[in-house]
Length: 114
Image (cartoon, rainbow, N blue to C red; front, side, top):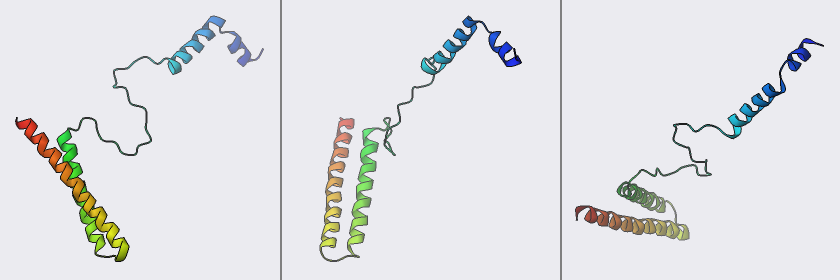
């Protein structure tokens, strides 16, 4: 017998079975850890943190809508015809949604005060 054969045959079948079971348990049945379990990855590139309160979410949405409206209005100055009409419509839609968000923020403020 060669050295490799001697080493292989020197292990008892029970030892090999135990090692195989430990390897399977390690990969297939990991012990729980104290870490917070991570959620499986999603296809989303960006996510909103679940810990952010409603008022903060609405405030950020309000600011973003104002930015969209301003960008669209500025762009409308650089184009003519039907393209200008579309861009102005986008600006006005953003302004309308901004008003809705502002109203929701006002209602939250009233609820918090009363």
